[in-house]
Length: 398
Image (tube, rainbow, N blue to C red; front, side, top):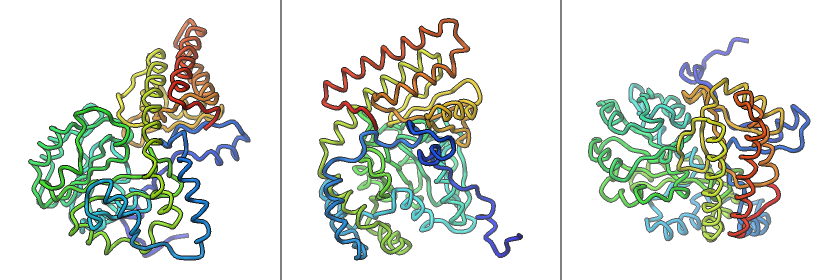
């Protein structure tokens, strides 16, 4: 069948491919013991406070949600020390990223993104009628100087992920300030901080603190990662009140549902959960990078809750071999990184043994001492169990 009267730009796009769902792999291969490391989700799930809030919110399912998200915006306003009028809520921060493109782009306009950046940036720009200008990466991350030089009279918006997904690279406070100083004030700059909770380095910039000097800066954040609310889809942006008003004109009514609003509000009140998740993530990074290093695999240093590495062979072959054993990782050739896969930095659990055991088997042909690989990986895991018990987090499953 020939489909007619379709937007030619939309017809030429490829849809976003999310990480493979556990349910899909179970249907395809009949597996029941599956570990998913593909989508950067919090392995601890959501906090107990969130689950209690959701039980209470169920009684109001017959009613439309608060279209303004008043309670959540007020709580965010108090926590972030910004005005409620600066906050735009979205169906995940992905929704807000798309709203920004729709609010700023026109035909013949341009949006700038980095090579190896989140694919949604380019999709949003193109869907809004603009042209995505891709600037080559520097050490797998954003080359801010080159991005600044790419600005033209047609540039409307620049997207920067900090840390970057899928590489985990990040820009420093000084690098970001130099970049902001170099970009014309009429160009909107989106600072995507989906993983900011995981960054501990003192040189990491505080985007919200820069908005007074740079009113063209928009900061986006999400409850999907550290807060463990990926299924509910809730995120937000902080911008000037004037730009937030523009976003509200293209935002769909009731774009954040009642359960998501209740869960996010409760999650904000449980910072102990966030602190423990972040600490466990640091332990998980040490665990996984040590194992990958002992497999002689090239790892991109990451400031997020994930790590990408070069398999040295076909990433699809590795992906499929791990799938057959119930392990889901993320091949990232579509991000311009052939041979690379990305996986969650997960805390230890018995299911993680599956990942390490079969990852080692995928590469053991490169070694003469197969047992040495297994011993190194599992001795590292045993150390992490002790560390996790020490901070009060030890789970037998995800």
